Structure formats: C-alpha cells, structure tokens
Image (cartoon, rainbow, N blue to C red; front, side, top):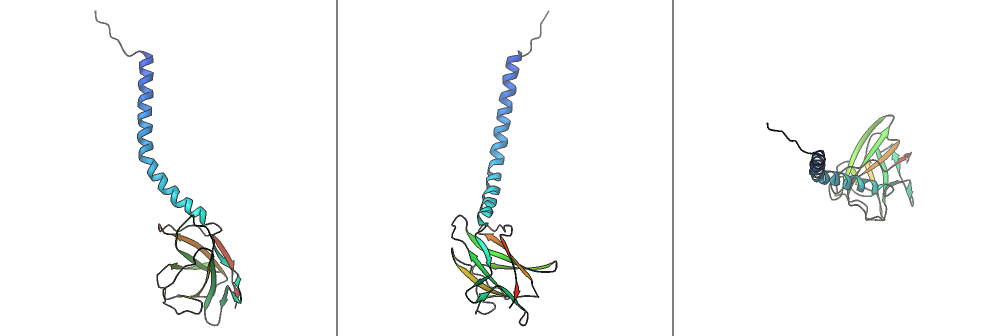
Length: 168
C-alpha cells in the first residue's frame, strides 16, 4: 500500500513566508515611484506656505480696489526660500460668495493684468526671491484677494495667503 506524504508544517510555513515576501517586494517596487512623484509635488507645495504672500502696502502703493476704473491692485511678495521653483500663481478676487481667478505665469501675456504703471497685454514676470511686484487686474468689484502658487511642474498648490481689499 502506498502512503501519501504532504509537506511538513515547517516547510509549508517557510514557503508561505517566501511567497509573501516576494509579493510585498513586487507591490513596493511598483507603487514606490508613484508615491514619490506625489510626495515630491505636495512636499513642494508645503514649502510654499509663508513664501508667496499678498501684501497690504509697499511705500505709497496699497492692495486695493479702484471702483472708478474697475481695477484691483494687488501686491505679491515672495520669500527668500529656494526650496521650490515657481512658474506663477493664481490670484482669485472675491465678492459676496463669487470669485474670479486670474493666472499670472512668468513670461506670458494676459490682457486683463498689467504691472503697476505698465500696459495691459505686456509680458508678465513674477517676483524673484525676496522681491515684490504690484499687479493691476481688470475686474468686477472685489473685496478680497487670494493667492495660490503654481510650481514649475504645473501643480497648482492650495492658497497660501489672502487679504481684504480696501477702496483706493
């Protein structure tokens, strides 16, 4: 009579552990690059906090809304951190639950935005590290401005600052 023999319990446990280790290694190898990409962009967004701000005034120029000309004046100041590369930013102007957003991208034109004392449609630039630039935006009445950085990778971060606009 033939006797059937199976694997000993010790060998079965070792095989289960080996299969589990191989499976976990394969999953980790597949998922790791994807997670690193996500974390690198979000990490950079975290580093923009406190580094891209709206300023109430610089010298005699104030962040305000000019009701007569239908323009919002906003001053954007950049911190000195070199932990991230900035492509531009989104400025949102709010009034009573409504909002209109404007993108300011380094080196691009925008017919609704100009630098202070500049012309609409001119090429725009963004502040360098430690600098501030005043922008004038054609807009409907606005009581508040918000800013969100856009990284070189194209990721638009969460808002980093907001400011109440006074009448000019």
